[in-house]
Image (cartoon, rainbow, N blue to C red; front, side, top):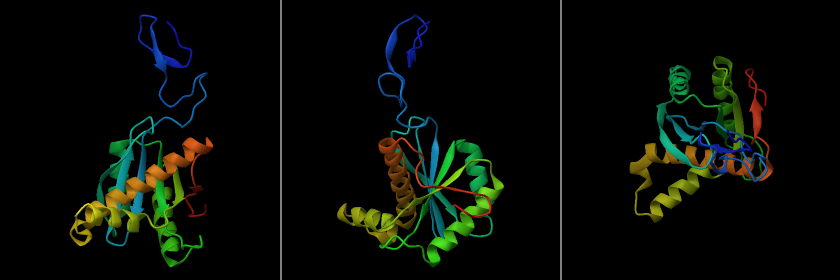
Length: 181
């Protein structure tokens, strides 16, 4: 059986490089499903990507509130991600304000309740950009809030995947269970 960082068919035919690798076997992105979260006051937008990290897609929403961590844990058990990417809202200057602190605190509670690593990734203007695209496509943003949240989570996850593809390093900052990154 042939292995050479390629897909093996069982009959010694090499059908190409293993997904997520460069010729010679160098990995461009870690393998495994990732979940992206856009944490809002009313809803938490959820996205997921394929195991090869090629495509991030909106998945749905979780209602924010007292059961959010339990609901997210159930979702993580279903999707079995290798990591969760949480959008961190920063100012245009790149500083953190009250919204960032709130996301850090809430994501810290999730980090304390799961063994799945959480990473914080800058999400500047993600929801604004998704809303703009929807308006340009003829959809009223006000009527599509749930869709916007999941699409924003997909944009956050796609941004994280792009960072990893270009740098070869995991995106953002690892969130520790105590809320520190």
